[in-house]
Image 1: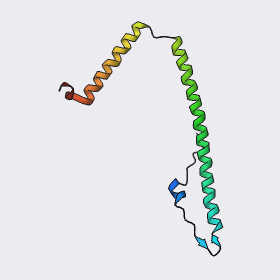
Image 2 (image 1 turned 45 degrees about the vertical axis):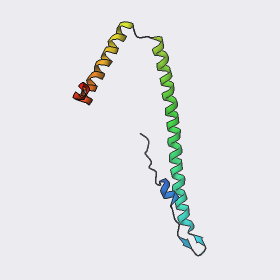
Image 3 (image 1 turned 30 degrees about the horizontal axis):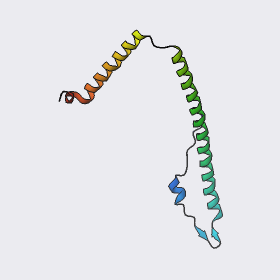
Image 4 (image 1 turned 90 degrees about the vertical axis):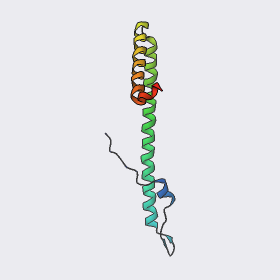
Length: 105
């Protein structure tokens, strides 16, 4: 797995950051350090956004290809009935487990 980077700042920390003032304004070194952290976080966010977009694209492609292959191979009618029965049986068992005797009321 790639080196996991962590975000150093939250939006509230950025929003509420106060810099100390000196005779001629803010301390330049403090402002530069803060902006370096903000830039680093944006790099992390942009990298994660790119990675997630690529993953999303790949998963959509896989989903489309699976859908096409399933359309090419329909489920035989005799297996479909058994599958529906199994689903209904599981649903009934789940309802009994979740609702218990309240179903009889």
